Image (cartoon, one colour):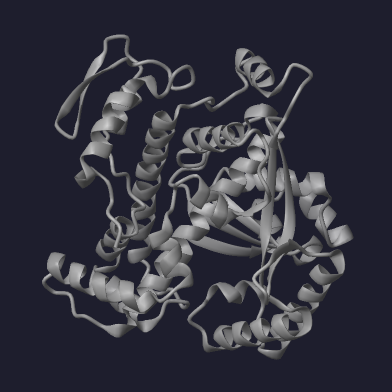
Length: 418
């Protein structure tokens, strides 16, 4: 579930009396006031995305919580534990920076989650390539699991929705992790605007280019009678026309195919070095992640995150299936919801695009904290699991080297290429 707010709407819904007064007097909020407002938002929503600047900001909230959380005052830990798989995602980001000698170029959120192994080339291939090839395979697979399913070429709407919603949620999570790690002074995070030129060269855009893009966008929104929030309704004919015109003007006026937010991250350092700095933070109890993972344990950590994320994604899809009055849904999406086929197709899409774990893990057993070891069965093999705090040694539970060797020797356990 997601919901779009203007700044005024967000302040009215979640703002304090002081924030409402500030908006009324100045027409905007200060940076500090806006940060405090977003903390209130996080008590009811799992993540959010902010677009635009000043009073023109549009805030999209994702994943409505079944129960409102109490605000957390400890600034270094504020918001931790709210994102699905936050511990795992924190660990993967920090470990990636360590493994690359703390020297990583700015990348889009999509590139980041690709580099971390959360999504792979099958999904990005469908995102940027021919969706028809995947649709044929999905038709066949869904017909096998649902006898009442009627194949329809407009299922491309469902494929588009999956790619858009799933990626938007995971990308929002990775950006939230960047912000939280930066707030906790673990990393330095900078967001830059980059573009891909007509000659396929990626580069940072100048301030003037960014201003020109904003002006083109503003004029075209007015021309097509749209507001920024409408652009999420990709099935609207006006939105399709806007996207076509916008792409053409980027090409003609700026020689750009597209532009995107690029995220530059670097671990905080000290005179003694990065690892000593992280060790110091860990001793203070200020870290909600682990680091210096082996190749095998990094693989398992990624699979644990994918398992948690895909389960949560399916839960959200089941909630959306119940909402048959969403005006932005295409006729095919509405039909799938009415026939109760939306969530089953979402589950198939998660598996088809390898968004689920390729390990058969029982996360409840893995995360148990009892002193007595537990026997966990993974792909027919039994492992003695030491039940210890995930903060101290979250991956000792898997006997990584032995298990990964078996996985690589038995390709049936891994997703296969097309």
